[in-house]
Length: 316
Image (cartoon, rainbow, N blue to C red):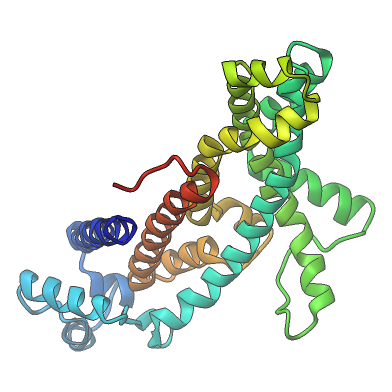
């Protein structure tokens, strides 16, 4: 049953990726203007325009362009970025993706370290001032635009106190200490927003579980409140919480454009903006495909984690 479930999900993932790839291809083909002219600029010579159209395969029938492009993508060839020195798209995307994953993972980790204990505490103290303060934090963090939080952190820690760099990137193999220093402020920006979102779900999930009959029975048997919460209630409260974490992690990978721009962090969102600026639409296409692939992969991992958290979950 388990392997059948994985096979079915992989099949569904393949269909989703095919639909995304098809949509991406035709969206870029129906955009106004000649893609070759967009790359070359406003007034290219006719000879250079025809040569670039030949190189990009734009002089062939649309269906042939689509099938050739889809076949190359299926083999892992995302094409070349002509406006960026004929560099392979994959060589541009994957280093940027790694930086985005690094930032997203640390941001999610900060969010988990804050939201799980805070959400549990708020649920156990429901209706008290502790609960009110926690809900206020969650509402404020959820409502505050990430770019505004980023600017506040930069003003405080970079310009006022001169403790951390305001932005930029240093590769870890060049200077690991400076790499971590550049990572602090963008990670906190992502982490605070994630903590606010996840705290709300952790609180509501734990509050719902604490009201169930089996929890009341555990209290009636004389178990300590901490024992009831951490040994009995937390596991069930984590099931919907993991779904929220997975969805937010997937959305975060494609949604950190603003944070990466503010801190000049050369991640995937930053690369997309730069590629649009220099009219490198092959990079944008590849970035969208990679983001979609990561999103569906994360959803599969979340589904598989259910079995480890709740043995009652069946894959039949």
